[in-house]
Structures are given as structure tokens and as C-alpha cells.
Length: 147
Image (cartoon, rainbow, N blue to C red; front, side):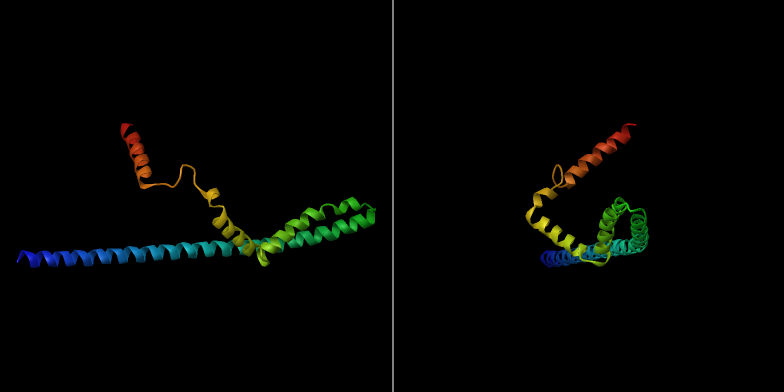
């Protein structure tokens, strides 16, 4: 009789462990999907911000370029054209970020860093461990208890 009861308990425990493992896996998958969704939304906001900024900066750049060119011609001072150079770099960068291939190039560069320069990504003092967190928590809780 004890053997049958023990066998049933072992089977129930095994089923419970499988259920817990499946549940943990499902929760992890949901967390990963949620993190990816948040990342995609943040990237979309960054691209949208860049495109919106480009509209305003493009207007400013156009007006400034026309005004500086007219002033340089009217006053015969080519030095008035110098501010157009740095402004054109900013305009080009923002255009590339909003409508060009800058994000794809950045992604490619990041993948290369992850593959070939992994040592540059290491955290100081290594990866955070549960034991290290528990030690810090205990020290902090002792600190608060003593006061």
C-alpha cells in the first residue's frame, strides 16, 4: 500500500515540476517579448524624433544658407559662408538617422563589436551574482537595523 502511495506522490511531484518548468519558460518568453517590444517602441520614438527635428532644423538650415549666401554675395565676404559647413554636417547626420541607413550601419557595427570585441563589454568586477546581491542586502539591512 505504501509503495502505491509513494509512486503516486512521485508521479504528482514530477508532474508539478514539469508544470513549474513550463510555467517558468512561458514567463521568460513573455518577458523577452515584452523587452523586445519596448526596445522597438523606443527605437521608433528615436527615429520619429529625428525626423521631426529634421523638419525644424531643415527649415533653419535652408533659411540660414540662403541668408548667408545672399549676405556673402551682397557684402562680397566669402567668410560668411563658413557656418554653412558645420550646419550641413548636422543636417546630413539627422537626415541619415531619420531616412537613411545610419541605424543599419550602427547595428552592423554593434554586431561586429559583440563578435570580435567582447572583452570591451565586460562589467567591472565581473557579472553580478545572487550571492553578491544577498551580501549587499544583508549589509544594508544591518545598517538600517542598527539605527
